[in-house]
View (cartoon, rainbow, N blue to C red):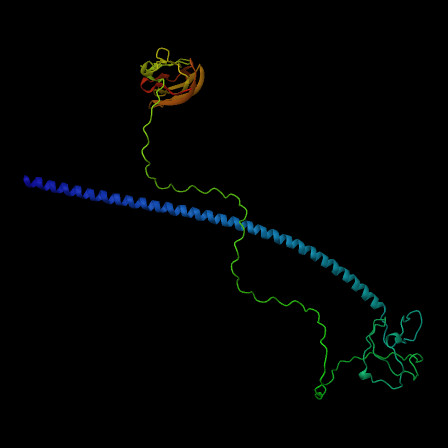
Length: 401
């Protein structure tokens, strides 16, 4: 028998030890889960802050992009205006070019035509002596291969070279005009001549010439080294107020302050009452509830026979009343001051249990003001019983005027 008792005690102690270990392990697991949840919360807060910062950066980039688009549009308008001006200038040049071509086409004269004609079809408006003055003319035949083109615009569009042999005359003014020769093209380039002898040293005392005109601006050189940091400039104007930040984490609890002085009670006329219904009653509309079971009545301003509180001390008062109804019951009550509604309370019981509601009002009263609880509404066909255990009326003076 003793062995059985000892064995039972051993088994019981082992069972308790196992349960204690399981409880400790469970507590450790709960603590680990709490730490993990706290870590997740911190990660979520950091993620929210990062997302808010990214959103702010995206908005700033959007504003910068809008400004760049606006600048590009403005530059596009300026380039469009310049392009229109260039197009107009090109059209004017094209018109002048077409006029010039038409004039040249009308003045073309075939080679071999006798230039000495003086009919109305062609009459030169200039003299060759005006463009090529000659003092005398020889009778030698010029070498056609070495002829040089006369780059003179003769008024009829053809560029010609010197003609053949003219008559022997004493002066250019009395020479007869020779016939215009054919056009000779010079395409072959001559050979390179031999190198001349080097000249001797010539000493010359020369005067310094004037300073020449300034040359064109050269290309920009490489960037110089970074200079020293300049002086700190004046403080700029105050910027706009930023957005309100998110609510921060609660700070650590502060240390307890020193113990305060003992409170001093200011004695004044005490007014307070508390009363309940004696029995469960069946109410009707317009009925004043009489709370006859008076538990407190300091100042004796509540009348249990009428259910009315009459003020004798002017001041600020706090009133509360509760109404309990049975299953499927319905009673609507109001707190009235001098027969005027101040607040309303609707109490509706459920199908399977009773219900009690309560309301509180703070009223400023003068002498002889009356406060009472009145039945405002009931529903025919539904229970209108007010339960005594869950219905009460109370009030007290908060402070005097």
